Image 1: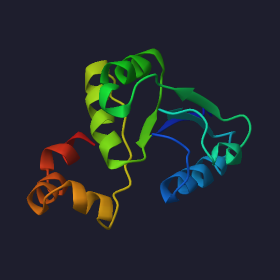
Image 2: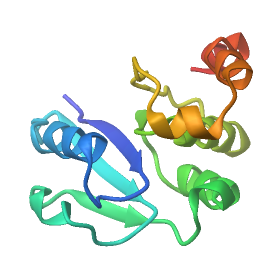
Image 3: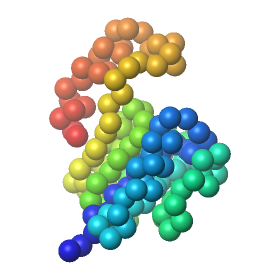
Image 4: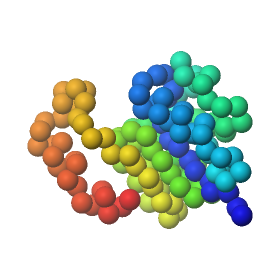
Length: 141
């Protein structure tokens, strides 16, 4: 039986709930059945040492908002069976990069069930409603 190759995509491992959940998830996959790779935008981080030895970690040289071409090139050069972005803004970039790379890789995304204070400050209620009700976005998943 061949292993499934999963790429987790995160901005950093600086700490926080998302990063802790990500590390727990990655560390508990059976390496016999799942080959896990982690793609980060920033090296280091306070939680980096919690990552199990042997997990392949790659880095992009740009910030997420400028990484579309670099990420699509990365996807073209590597063969993944599943993509797992960890943040809402990474989902949009991953979907666009996947489209540009012409790879038909399934994307798994965990929808957050609450709107954080940060989102409330950065978006109007109208734009949040429009973002979360965007049927085009979910059809791409």
